[in-house]
Image (cartoon, rainbow, N blue to C red; front, side, top):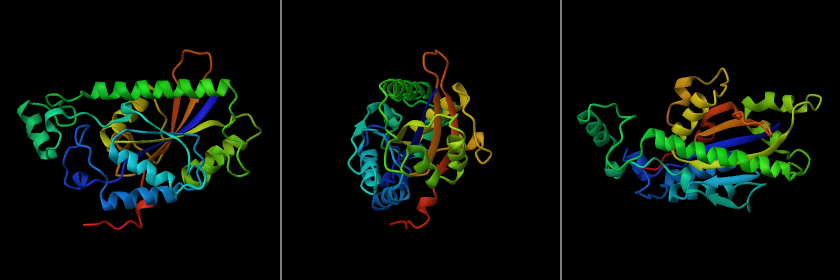
Length: 270
């Protein structure tokens, strides 16, 4: 069995987030001053976590957030980031650049509920979910191929192994460390992947984990929480188990969802 960790983070705040304006893919708004502070805060929080791979949406707000995270890292400062259009926010068509209230009005006129409503020119939730599924399946394939080539990403300095560095940072992951250390029966992590993406996209990806892959949740996380939109720079951590040579689906274990304690000291800029 091959295991890897997947840390998914929503980008920092933009001015349009604050104003509740839909950005989608067509409005490429940079981070606000608060957003840059949030990116730096999450970077400091994760500075001792050893990542083996980094993926980001190719939109400005996610690129800037990823840069803010990695520049604070003690272990991943110079790592290469792969920018992937499949990680972009949901496309909202004619509603991009308009207030969320206008989307609700369009949905009401169409006789639909806002979350499931697709504005003209926009993506359906199923289309967004499919983008997430394809990205995730390709990621799993990449990790398996690299594991087959015996690329030992976790052979860092003592104490800096992939699983140990995660367990030091995430309180809910401490049980994972004991799991990895118990008589060597549980394989260590083949990779630790950092992804920076967007709120609506992440909600669709997590829905895929929960609905299609039957993701297991810790007692502290409810199904409604996994279906909610992450706060800006909210952190969600999953452990993925892959069986080599089998057609079965990966198993997904949620360690924590929408963590935001790193934001406690961040003051909002008006």
